[in-house]
Image (cartoon, rainbow, N blue to C red; front, side, top):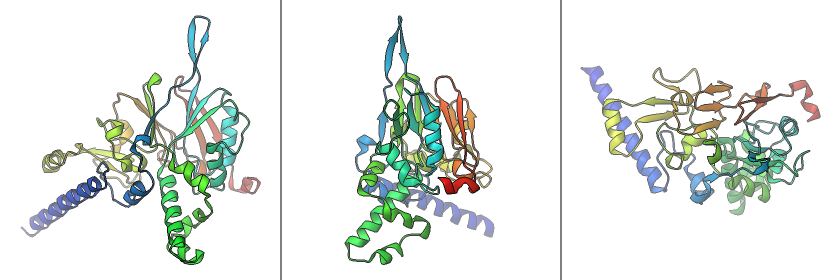
Length: 326
């Protein structure tokens, strides 16, 4: 009886937390998340223009004989400031390629600022004049923006640089050096890019099954790794609250619940999705979703895929003893 009472109390707390989270997100004009609310201030402060959250890319075509030929399209996994590997990747890809970076452009690696400048077009690469480079935002990009804006706010209020830095976690204090131009580049990145010619979609982290990308929580797009299907009272409550019966989770692989699965294995389309974010699982080749974070910043590799042919392009990471030459 005592254990049953504890279970009921636990369920009531879960219900209240869910309702509170839904109200909190909708109050801020955002789609509710199955995760925490720590990124909400960033969405409200930085990503105000919802029209920019989801973009469509129409790829160039040209006539070749009596056929229309489309330029090759590649999606590249998480760069995380590894600019040498990114430059090598761009050199390897065709001169006329359309290239989409799948988020987490910065942080952890040695050259975040250079990566931003390559995306902005202010740092040239071998094929800058002919390649088309695009990017979406990842959770590390959002966090960097949030901490950078917070740092500027604190300084504007009269705090010294050191006092402002004391409020920011030590591993994020590098954001003080982000320029206004680089801040604007990151803030202008979409959360998804749709490629209608190929029935494909690029996001950073994941998607809840059976929910259009425009109706997905921004948290899920940049944080989720797993999904589970709700049942019983939980499913009924989620239906009443207007939530999907599928519950998203950002839990690290190996620590997920027994009923959670990688979201890519549960995704049945209609669009094929290309994503990053999940370096522990590495390359994921599910029927309708391709995961491309192969842990470049952890010494493994940077991976790209041609979304028409499925061919992979792999650039090995520069090993620690070579990093002094970056």
